[in-house]
Image (cartoon, rainbow, N blue to C red; front, side):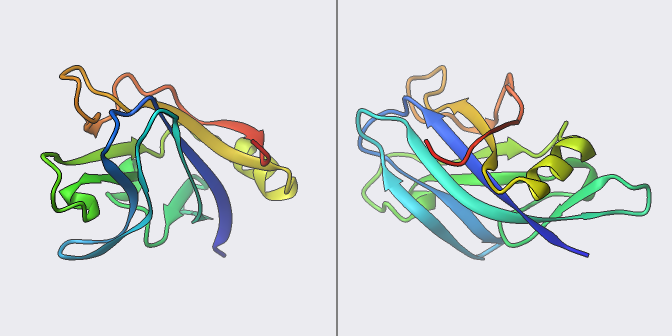
Length: 148
């Protein structure tokens, strides 16, 4: 049975003037949702993904925002032209891994509506542009209160 998990991704200090959003769908058939233009503040994306247990009782994340094989699921953040900002000099995507989330953490999240699964990742890369590729080092996911 699939159950929904609330997710919060915070992009810390992204370079200003660039559109960022969450990729829904894959291949050429995708759309960017929750689009935001960066300014002086961190960007925050809140949405839900599905989870179910697979044959070895491990969580398997599903849904239109989840990409990759079951052992390496991730979420894409579209950036610049990839997010529909056609006048941007940037065409990038950022991979947010869905790893190291325990069954206990998921159970706690499913039983307590005051919690959200959150990660904070750098919004700016080493080149000074928007962070892209797989987040490294990845700080992981933690439970956080729903109100910010």
